[in-house]
Amino acid sequence: MLMHFILAVSLNDVSHRQDHDSSQEAQKHFKVGAQGLIETIKKQSTEDHVFVMASFLFLYLYMPKRKSVPRQRIRQLSLTVLEYLKQHKLDSLCLDSAQADTTGSSSDLTYRDRHVLARLIIWIYDEDVKCGFQGSGGLLAKYLTAHRERTMAVYEVSRTVLKAHWGSIYPAEQLADDDDNAMELEFLWALTGLWQEINELSQAVGLDQVEMRHRIETRFTFLKKVQTL
Image (cartoon, rainbow, N blue to C red; front, top):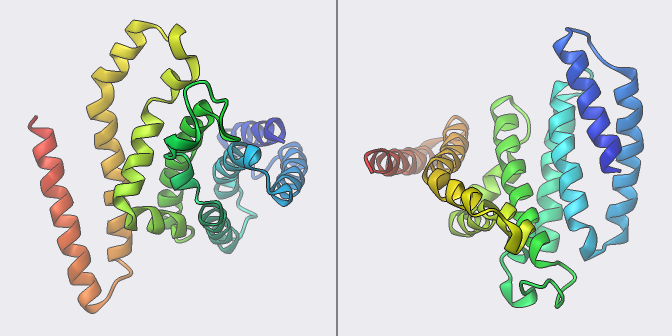
Protein backbone atom coordinates (compact mmCIF):
# COMPACT_ATOMS: atom_id res chain seq x y z
CA MET A 1 0.00 0.00 0.00
CA LEU A 2 2.68 2.49 1.04
CA MET A 3 4.91 1.57 -1.89
CA HIS A 4 2.07 2.28 -4.31
CA PHE A 5 1.55 5.69 -2.69
CA ILE A 6 5.29 6.42 -2.81
CA LEU A 7 5.35 5.59 -6.52
CA ALA A 8 2.23 7.67 -7.15
CA VAL A 9 3.68 10.72 -5.41
CA SER A 10 7.09 10.31 -7.08
CA LEU A 11 5.72 9.83 -10.61
CA ASN A 12 3.27 12.69 -10.13
CA ASP A 13 6.08 14.94 -8.93
CA VAL A 14 8.21 14.13 -11.98
CA SER A 15 5.25 14.88 -14.24
CA HIS A 16 4.57 18.13 -12.36
CA ARG A 17 8.19 19.29 -12.71
CA GLN A 18 8.07 18.61 -16.44
CA ASP A 19 4.91 20.75 -16.75
CA HIS A 20 2.74 17.79 -17.71
CA ASP A 21 -0.87 17.88 -16.55
CA SER A 22 -0.94 14.37 -15.14
CA SER A 23 0.61 10.93 -15.08
CA GLN A 24 -1.61 7.95 -15.83
CA GLU A 25 0.94 5.63 -14.24
CA ALA A 26 0.84 7.70 -11.06
CA GLN A 27 -2.95 7.51 -11.04
CA LYS A 28 -2.85 3.72 -11.39
CA HIS A 29 -0.59 3.39 -8.34
CA PHE A 30 -2.74 5.88 -6.44
CA LYS A 31 -5.92 3.87 -7.05
CA VAL A 32 -4.28 0.63 -5.88
CA GLY A 33 -2.91 2.37 -2.79
CA ALA A 34 -6.27 3.99 -2.04
CA GLN A 35 -8.03 0.62 -2.22
CA GLY A 36 -5.47 -0.81 0.18
CA LEU A 37 -6.01 2.13 2.53
CA ILE A 38 -9.77 1.57 2.58
CA GLU A 39 -9.28 -2.11 3.41
CA THR A 40 -6.72 -1.32 6.10
CA ILE A 41 -9.00 1.21 7.81
CA LYS A 42 -11.84 -1.35 7.85
CA LYS A 43 -9.65 -3.76 9.85
CA GLN A 44 -9.71 -1.33 12.81
CA SER A 45 -6.36 -2.61 14.06
CA THR A 46 -4.13 -0.62 16.43
CA GLU A 47 -1.12 -2.07 14.65
CA ASP A 48 -2.18 -0.31 11.44
CA HIS A 49 -2.33 3.27 12.79
CA VAL A 50 1.16 4.14 11.57
CA PHE A 51 0.47 2.71 8.09
CA VAL A 52 -2.84 4.55 7.83
CA MET A 53 -1.38 7.89 8.92
CA ALA A 54 1.59 7.45 6.56
CA SER A 55 -0.90 6.82 3.75
CA PHE A 56 -2.82 9.97 4.68
CA LEU A 57 0.43 11.94 4.47
CA PHE A 58 1.02 10.66 0.93
CA LEU A 59 -2.53 11.66 0.01
CA TYR A 60 -1.67 15.21 1.07
CA LEU A 61 1.48 15.08 -1.03
CA TYR A 62 -0.42 13.75 -4.06
CA MET A 63 -3.91 15.21 -4.29
CA PRO A 64 -3.23 19.00 -4.17
CA LYS A 65 -0.84 18.69 -7.14
CA ARG A 66 -3.47 17.03 -9.34
CA LYS A 67 -5.43 19.63 -11.30
CA SER A 68 -8.21 17.13 -11.78
CA VAL A 69 -8.83 16.80 -8.02
CA PRO A 70 -11.67 19.10 -6.82
CA ARG A 71 -10.84 21.25 -3.77
CA GLN A 72 -13.79 19.66 -1.98
CA ARG A 73 -12.04 16.28 -2.04
CA ILE A 74 -9.05 17.74 -0.22
CA ARG A 75 -11.39 19.22 2.37
CA GLN A 76 -12.96 15.76 2.71
CA LEU A 77 -9.48 14.30 3.21
CA SER A 78 -8.86 16.78 6.02
CA LEU A 79 -12.16 15.78 7.63
CA THR A 80 -11.43 12.06 7.21
CA VAL A 81 -8.02 12.36 8.87
CA LEU A 82 -9.51 14.45 11.69
CA GLU A 83 -12.24 11.86 12.32
CA TYR A 84 -9.72 9.01 12.26
CA LEU A 85 -7.41 10.80 14.68
CA LYS A 86 -10.27 11.62 17.07
CA GLN A 87 -11.87 8.17 16.83
CA HIS A 88 -8.65 6.43 17.85
CA LYS A 89 -7.37 9.31 20.01
CA LEU A 90 -4.05 9.16 18.19
CA ASP A 91 -2.78 12.47 19.56
CA SER A 92 -3.13 10.98 23.05
CA LEU A 93 -2.12 7.44 22.11
CA CYS A 94 1.35 8.45 21.00
CA LEU A 95 1.84 10.15 24.39
CA ASP A 96 0.71 7.20 26.50
CA SER A 97 3.98 6.00 28.01
CA ALA A 98 2.09 3.74 30.40
CA GLN A 99 1.14 1.47 27.49
CA ALA A 100 4.58 1.08 26.01
CA ASP A 101 8.08 0.73 27.43
CA THR A 102 11.42 1.03 25.72
CA THR A 103 11.28 -2.60 24.66
CA GLY A 104 7.92 -2.12 22.98
CA SER A 105 6.70 -5.42 24.42
CA SER A 106 3.74 -4.28 26.50
CA SER A 107 1.48 -2.65 23.93
CA ASP A 108 0.09 -3.10 20.42
CA LEU A 109 1.67 0.28 19.68
CA THR A 110 5.40 -0.07 20.29
CA TYR A 111 7.70 2.54 21.79
CA ARG A 112 9.19 3.28 18.37
CA ASP A 113 5.78 3.42 16.67
CA ARG A 114 4.56 6.02 19.17
CA HIS A 115 7.36 8.32 18.03
CA VAL A 116 6.74 7.60 14.33
CA LEU A 117 3.02 8.24 14.82
CA ALA A 118 3.77 11.56 16.50
CA ARG A 119 6.07 12.58 13.64
CA LEU A 120 3.38 11.69 11.08
CA ILE A 121 0.77 13.75 12.94
CA ILE A 122 3.06 16.79 12.93
CA TRP A 123 3.92 16.39 9.24
CA ILE A 124 0.23 16.01 8.30
CA TYR A 125 -0.59 19.02 10.47
CA ASP A 126 1.85 21.10 8.42
CA GLU A 127 0.39 19.87 5.11
CA ASP A 128 -3.18 20.53 6.27
CA VAL A 129 -2.27 24.11 7.19
CA LYS A 130 -0.97 24.64 3.64
CA CYS A 131 -4.19 23.23 2.18
CA GLY A 132 -6.20 25.56 4.40
CA PHE A 133 -4.44 28.56 2.87
CA GLN A 134 -5.31 27.24 -0.58
CA GLY A 135 -9.01 27.24 0.23
CA SER A 136 -9.36 23.57 1.15
CA GLY A 137 -8.49 21.43 4.13
CA GLY A 138 -7.53 22.99 7.44
CA LEU A 139 -10.04 21.07 9.58
CA LEU A 140 -7.40 18.87 11.18
CA ALA A 141 -5.09 21.87 11.61
CA LYS A 142 -7.83 23.82 13.38
CA TYR A 143 -8.40 20.96 15.83
CA LEU A 144 -4.70 20.48 16.60
CA THR A 145 -4.13 24.23 16.97
CA ALA A 146 -7.07 24.50 19.39
CA HIS A 147 -5.54 21.75 21.57
CA ARG A 148 -2.23 23.57 21.81
CA GLU A 149 -0.70 21.88 24.87
CA ARG A 150 -1.41 18.34 23.71
CA THR A 151 -0.18 19.07 20.20
CA MET A 152 2.99 20.55 21.66
CA ALA A 153 3.48 17.31 23.60
CA VAL A 154 3.03 15.36 20.35
CA TYR A 155 5.68 17.54 18.76
CA GLU A 156 8.11 16.79 21.61
CA VAL A 157 7.63 13.05 21.08
CA SER A 158 8.08 13.45 17.31
CA ARG A 159 11.32 15.37 17.79
CA THR A 160 13.16 12.29 19.09
CA VAL A 161 11.82 9.81 16.54
CA LEU A 162 15.26 8.89 15.15
CA LYS A 163 16.73 8.30 18.60
CA ALA A 164 13.69 6.17 19.50
CA HIS A 165 14.05 4.14 16.29
CA TRP A 166 17.79 3.43 16.55
CA GLY A 167 17.99 3.10 20.33
CA SER A 168 21.41 2.44 21.83
CA ILE A 169 23.15 2.41 18.42
CA TYR A 170 22.05 5.98 17.61
CA PRO A 171 25.32 7.91 17.03
CA ALA A 172 26.29 10.35 19.79
CA GLU A 173 27.21 13.02 17.22
CA GLN A 174 23.74 12.75 15.67
CA LEU A 175 22.13 13.13 19.09
CA ALA A 176 24.24 16.25 19.67
CA ASP A 177 23.15 17.60 16.27
CA ASP A 178 19.51 17.00 17.20
CA ASP A 179 19.98 19.02 20.38
CA ASP A 180 21.73 21.84 18.48
CA ASN A 181 18.82 22.11 16.04
CA ALA A 182 16.06 21.76 18.63
CA MET A 183 15.41 25.51 18.97
CA GLU A 184 15.22 26.10 15.21
CA LEU A 185 12.83 23.19 14.73
CA GLU A 186 10.62 24.37 17.59
CA PHE A 187 10.58 27.83 16.02
CA LEU A 188 9.40 26.35 12.71
CA TRP A 189 6.77 24.30 14.52
CA ALA A 190 5.50 27.43 16.28
CA LEU A 191 5.22 29.15 12.90
CA THR A 192 2.93 26.35 11.69
CA GLY A 193 0.47 27.16 14.47
CA LEU A 194 0.78 30.87 13.68
CA TRP A 195 -0.01 30.29 10.00
CA GLN A 196 -3.12 28.35 10.98
CA GLU A 197 -4.30 31.13 13.29
CA ILE A 198 -3.76 33.73 10.56
CA ASN A 199 -5.82 31.56 8.23
CA GLU A 200 -8.59 31.30 10.84
CA LEU A 201 -8.47 35.08 11.33
CA SER A 202 -9.42 35.58 7.69
CA GLN A 203 -12.57 33.55 8.33
CA ALA A 204 -13.50 35.01 11.74
CA VAL A 205 -16.02 37.78 12.40
CA GLY A 206 -16.91 40.04 15.33
CA LEU A 207 -15.64 39.01 18.75
CA ASP A 208 -14.03 35.88 17.33
CA GLN A 209 -11.85 38.08 15.16
CA VAL A 210 -10.80 40.21 18.14
CA GLU A 211 -9.87 37.07 20.11
CA MET A 212 -7.92 35.65 17.15
CA ARG A 213 -5.97 38.91 16.76
CA HIS A 214 -5.03 38.80 20.44
CA ARG A 215 -3.82 35.19 20.16
CA ILE A 216 -1.76 36.01 17.09
CA GLU A 217 -0.17 39.05 18.75
CA THR A 218 0.65 36.91 21.79
CA ARG A 219 2.31 34.30 19.59
CA PHE A 220 4.31 37.01 17.77
CA THR A 221 5.54 38.29 21.13
CA PHE A 222 6.62 34.77 22.11
CA LEU A 223 8.44 34.25 18.82
CA LYS A 224 10.31 37.55 19.22
CA LYS A 225 11.48 36.43 22.65
CA VAL A 226 12.67 33.12 21.24
CA GLN A 227 14.53 34.94 18.47
CA THR A 228 16.58 36.92 20.99
CA LEU A 229 17.68 33.85 22.97
